Amino acid sequence: LSAQAGTTYVQADRMVDVVSGKTVEKPALVITDGRITSVGTQGSLAVPAGAERLDLAGMTILPGLIDMHVHLTGRHDMHGYEGLAESTGDETINGVIHAEKTLMAGFTAARNLGAAGYADVALRRALAANRLNGPRLYVSGPSIGATGGHCDNNLLPPEYDAHSQGAADGPWGVVKKVREVKKYGADLIKICATGGVLSKGTQVGAQQLAQEEMDAIVAEAKRLGLKVAAHAHGTAGIKAAIRAGVDTVEHASFIDDEGIRLAKERGTYLSMDIYNTEYILSAGEAAGFLPESLAKERVVGKTQRESFSRAVKAGVKMVFGSDAGVYPHGDNGKQFARMVQFGMTPMQAIQAATVNAADALGASSDIGALAVGRYGDLIAVKGDPLADISVLERVDVVVKGGKLVKGTL
Ligand code: ARG
Image 1: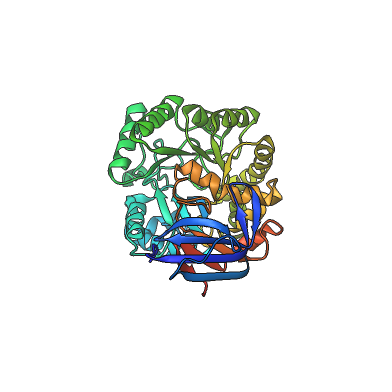
Image 2: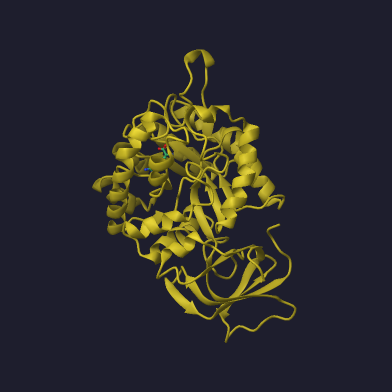
């Protein structure tokens, strides 16, 4: 369903060039056997013989979007104790449904951060084999974290002996987990460095992995060639994760000035889910979130947005990460308007979801820009996203690997 043999000639009114940060008028590009083979303008680029034509008159084209933090196997309407009823089978089916929704929203690639039972690996395999419709996936398998921490299952009393697959302790304990998730197919490592909003009994601000544990995780991940994403809300945990050398910090809610300085120094990307709070606070009760989570959210959401503004102003590298799954899949794009509201230019917000995201994934040769050699993944919208970023909430055309997956010719 997603790669296409043959040649497609795409033309539009405007193109957002995320590499130069400029707009190109009357762009044209050629996609051959799934990858972009030339990029130019309608005047300069001839239509190759036998090419299929995609004329996106009146529209702006952009690279396919990348969401760096999704939970495709999770449901927005099943949180807290309700979520316990979900089997790995249920979660895999969720993933199939949500992968398609995510793609239709214009996200041609996504990073899935945390899934039980390797449902994410199964999903990635089926997508890569073109057996399903969805984004190109980069997956972590189970999140690695401390016993009783944010990534553990803390909902049940001891006689159930419930724990998440990624729960581990001590430097060698967590190293073993890194090896295990690699063995079963993860592309990258997700860790929980601090408490969280949605977990029972955890303090958002509390660091939950020792520096030694994070150092050990990152060292082992590097040996295996894997990137590391760290869930971290609390000030100390954020800094410990950055010092350990993680590639992205998720949430980053209580980052202080030293954390911002460290992130800049180390080139660490922040992935801040600043739309999330609106859903949790408005729909949270009906969706089954724990009362303690709603209480935590009231503090975290507001502070996180202030931190986002400070980090943007300071010039920290940023990627687009929504945490969709907490809120409805397919609504990923709603975060763009918040990123602009809290300090980014529209171009910066788009770069966060394209060129920066690809860099943070180590996938710049494949995705993230409309450039020769990369996959023919693009979207088209009516209007100009640089003038009104909210047009990215309404993506009319999606092309993946040169194949039109949404919209009509
Ligand atoms: N998965 C995250 C957690 O449980 C969600 C945080 C949502 N809140 C926010 N303001 N970003 O910690």
